[in-house]
Image 1 (spheres, rainbow, N blue to C red):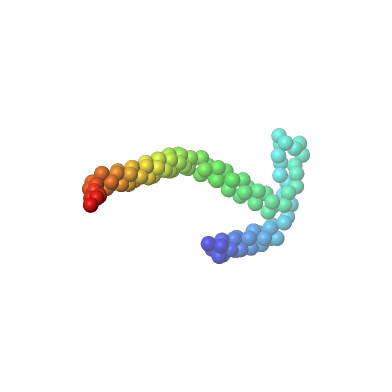
Image 2 (image 1 turned 90 degrees about the vertical axis):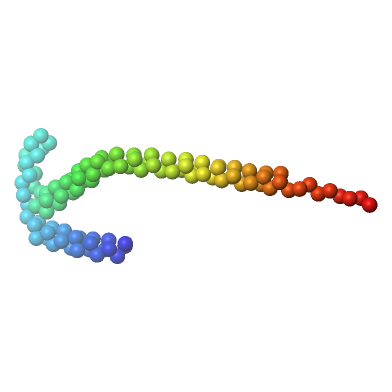
Length: 114
């Protein structure tokens, strides 16, 4: 798993570094409500920030959409734990009843005094 991570992460990191080196020119970014004047940012910073924001928004949307499934899993886990406790309780009860049956069906030993 760790090897797969590095096999995917290193080429992606290399692409990001090459993109940043090749796109270091400044671009004026006009953030009108925040800043009155245009602000100069490197092109790679604008592009990578947009990608990062899109990644975060996509992650939040995926997390929200998975909420129903996570709730169902939690409910099923609680149900499974309850059924396992019930099974254990019933197994103990069967063992106790079998032990009681054995003791009640054994013939009483009588000692004959001579």
